[in-house]
Image (cartoon, rainbow over all chains, first blue to last red; front, side):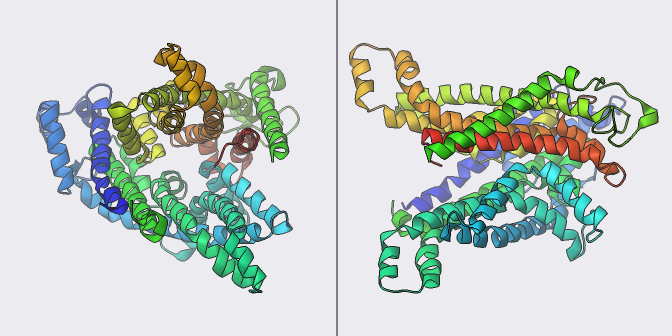
Length: 305
Length: 269
């Protein structure tokens, strides 16, 4: 079987592993999760109903198989706080997270790749120094601080953009920048390094010797070879963006899955917490697998294993 | 390359030592009690006696930022030490042993590495409840996998080298081969990874505390301080700026140290 096919097959045990971790989560709760969720003064009938609904009245192995079976069919149980199926709550929030992650991805690509190329073409130049500084800065500004910092600067001091919420394009700018800047730093660094080594390749020297114009050498001969690793890292980072929205959504009151996890934790709505972690985890795994498969299909050296 | 590496590593190490020293010398540098509240001086700006101002309960921000350095560095160091020891031990043993043990371990690591780390740490911290010990547990639960993968690759590559065969021929037991012959050669790679890992652990601790899942009040974790100061960005920005700058400087120190060590020890990216 091809490497790409094998990689796709690996998706199944990985997803089962993710679901197992999520299942174990409820059993790590110290004390009785049902009592924690409903409070000590809950009616015994309600306690029994919820215990049965969560499957906590059955042997662990039976419960585990049932959990996996239901999850595979898209049944993640009922949210206690929202009084509706977990999948419906998640479906209403997922688009906001996708929108935020996509915007952050775009910002990272547009900011990261051109700067990385410019730096890789002229190592040691002023542009290179700016790019290296920007990449180090991006790596050193954690989201928990970058978010409030951007709010202070662009929303409070300058008054250009709204502090929080979702709806208009202006609402999207600050959260997407907060989320995307770290990835931009990674892309600058990687693009610079791959361009540096691509420009040292023999076929680039030949192209130059033949008198190919420099812009063509850079864009056609070097960048095309550097594109595969850049695309792969960008794909892996896209998965990380999807999974990394918790902090950004909390800072900007962005109504997505990341904020929902924290709200569910605060409300002790464990079925909803499990559902969110499972969906975010599965999305992350899926994006990473697709990236890997695409990489193996695009790079002829990896096509047949 | 190595020369620039030395300069970068030294700059990072110096900054890190300075931060740790400031944390240790907190009571001398900042005369105020980091937990003493003065409600009359709530949100007071920086001035003589309170170089970074006072917070929502009138506590001295400078004293709290310094004590926060202890929390950040201690949690980061503990999480990395546990992850590194566990990961390196498991990885070196499996890589050296080879066979089905190694196969199984490699698959387990693949599955665990396929899971978004911060998300699992958030879920674990939420289940375990607030507390610095629980933060260390939550960060180490997945943290060891990266080191295990690196150590496994190193051990598998070194296993067939002559000096290992020679040691085995002289009757060295597996434990001795791993400790005396594999550990020294795997150390540079793991050390560089651990430096970046510590930066990651410190940011993760700040993130968990920011979400209210890490250090419990009134502990001055930088993440918790940023969260407390957020509603007052308009009138008292120093509440968010001071702990944030400290956090960024700590990450910068570890990034520089990691970058420098990588060049110095000639470890690939």
